[in-house]
Image 1 (spheres, chains in turn green, brown):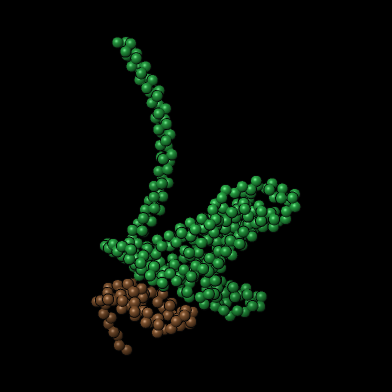
Image 2 (cartoon, rainbow over the protein chains, first blue to last red; image 1 turned 120 degrees about the vertical axis):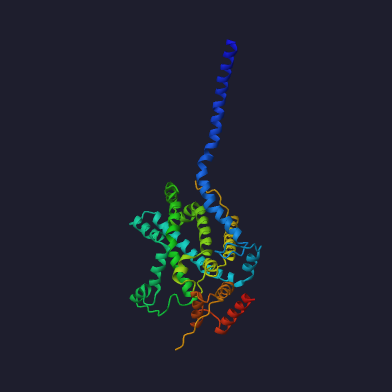
Length: 311
Length: 62
């Protein structure tokens, strides 16, 4: 009896010894998921659920307020793809695309220059990044005064003896170019900081070695900096394209879509909140999302993200 | 001067046709487009503009 008791005690203690690591292992497996619960819940509740909702609305004729909505199948999508006036606004994105090319080139230029030892380097970094910190609505108002007749731009030009007598936001071409210029001014800082960070992560010995080999600044840029920042460059291109297709704040505040500055997003907002066509507007938003995903996919296929190995 | 009483008994219908045809008779965009047309910032004539409006309005009515 005593022996069996002894045995059971031994058995249970041995069992406990085996169980403890097993439980520990199980806990170790669960722990990452426990940590992930909070971010995943936030992500699903505030990102994916609304998108799923929007996709669901895009198949209905919901007006945004009514408690009743009817399933209309793909009618909204047919309407979007058959009404050419809904697609014509994408031409406006062309101005912003062209502006992003200028923007990337300028950002790359400034980032390269300011990555070398230049006087007042930090001051210039601050100056270039500052516009990105300003609120978009404030930028809209600032540049409304800037482009006004006799406003800042005209006064500055007249200091140099140039009198244009030209309403900057007056014609479609001029207005779109001006607005695209504002958006370059606004987002240059972001691109600049991304490029600067990428350039500064290139080890400094490479420049030294290149200099010993007799490379000048252009060679350093061409063979060290350019390949070194390729992943960031392709990211910036994706961001610029998707940004150009979905411009909203600046034209909405400055012209309200008049003078041919209406973009796809302004049009979508008008459909949803002016004409109560929330279903159609949701479909438009889904189409925009798909176009951006398609462009990103094509771009990734054309420029695959190779591992960069400088050394 | 003579005041005309506006009869709003069918206001809901007007609102619905207005939304359906995307005319926006009380919206700023309607005037914006007219002004842009008048000063030549957008191409096209006034008659075409109104013809397009009435076409959409009639379609929404039906």
